[in-house]
Image (tube, rainbow, N blue to C red; front, side, top):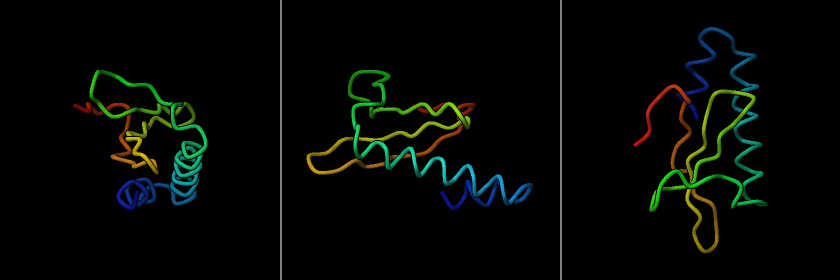
Length: 79
């Protein structure tokens, strides 16, 4: 998240804070609703597609927690 914040903040620090806060709020939402994201293919981690900002949260569900694998811009390919 630090790289994302720094990248956006280079042009607009206020927007950077808003984007990061939104992504964090959506990640926290996953703790209550872990099955919210989709499974793009068998064996792959789940993916929560964000609609307000063009990012996806890639995560795995373990027995006791949600593990964020990556936050990725929607224009980038994720294997």
